[in-house]
Length: 466
Image (cartoon, rainbow, N blue to C red; front, side):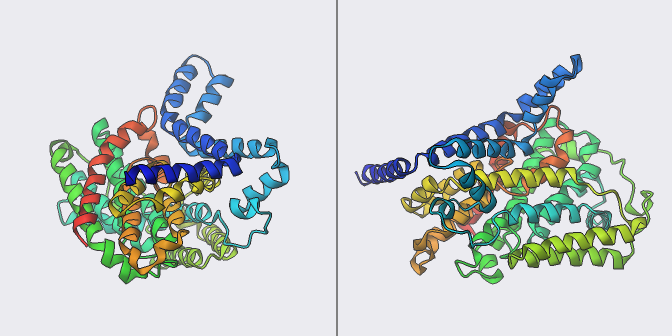
C-alpha cells in the first residue's frame, strides 16, 4: 500500500509540474525522440550506404546526417530551440537565454544566469580529445603499454588485456576523456586493424566503455559523474578511492578475465602486423616535447576543476601554437572526432537540462537499493554526469544520514556508463574513433547486450567490495 501511495504522490507531483509549465513534458518528449534516434542511427547509416551505391543525392546525404550518432542530440537541440521560439509565452529571447546558459530554472524565472559555464564539460572533452590525440601523447602511451605487454610476450592478446586494463585506470589521473581517446587509438592501431570477429569487436568496445566509466573512480577529479558531486558532498580523492577504488580495480580485472577466457582462442590466434614504436617511421618525440603536452593536459584538468573557461581555452591556444613551433614531432590535428563529440555533449546538456522535473522526484522516492538500479537505468538514457548532477541538487542527499543513498546514486551511474553511447561523456569519443571498423556503424542493441556482463560485474563489485 505504501508503494501505491508513493507512486500516487510521485504522479501528482509530476502532473502539477507539467500543468504549471507544459513546455517541460514537450521538451521531455523531444528528448525521448532523440534517445530513440540514437539507437536507430545505424539503420539510417546502412540505408545511406545502400542509396550511395546507386546514386549520391540529397536523400543519401540526409540519411548520412541522421546516421551520425554524434550529431543526434545536436539536431534535436535545434528542434528544441525552434519549439521554444514558437511556444506561447516563450519566444526568441527565452530560447536564446536558455541555450546560452543551459539553466532552465534561471531562464524560466527571468533571472540572470550567474553559475558556472554549463557547456564547460563539452568544451573540456573537446580540448582534452584534441590534446590526447597528438603524436607525443599517443606515442608515449603506446611505448608504455607496449612495454608492459612485452612482459607478457607482446602478442595482440597481451596488448588487448593491457590496453583495456591500464588505460581505463590511467583515466583517474589523465581524466576519462583522455583515457578513452588514447585507448581507442591504440586499439584501432593494434587490435581492430587485425579484423577480429564482429562479436569480439563489440565485446571489446563494451569492455572499453564500462572500464573507462568505472576506471576514473579512483580520484575525485577525473570522472565527470564524480566531479559533479565531489565538492557538494565533501569528497576528496581519499573518500572516493575508499568507497569505489578497490571495487573498480576488481571489476575491471574480473570483466577482462571473463571476456579473455570467452574469446581466448580467437585472441591467441590473432597475428600482429603492427611494428614496434621505434621503427614505425615516426621520428622519436623528445622527452621535453612530451612533457609540455602532458603539462597542458594537466593545466586543462586544473582549469576544469576551477571552472576557468577562458584559461582552459588559453591552454588550447598555447597547445596549437606549440604544435606549430614543433612540426617535426607533430601529426596533423584530428579535429573531426573531438568536434563531433563536443557537439554531441553540448546537445545532451541542452536537452538533459530539461529533464530534472521528472528525474528529481524519482530520486527522492526511492531507497538505496532501488536508487542504485534507478540510477543505472537512467544513466543508459541520460549521461551519468547529468544523473549525479541532478542528485547533487537534492538537499536531503547531502545529509550525513544519506550516505547509503549517495553511494547508490554514484555506483549506479558509474556501473551503467558503458551500456549505451550516451551513458558516459567519453563514450562518443570512443565510437567516433572506432566506428569505422564496424560494418554499417555501431549497433546500439549489440553494444548494450555485450555491455550487460561487465556492467553486472561492476554492480556486484560495488555492492560487495567497499
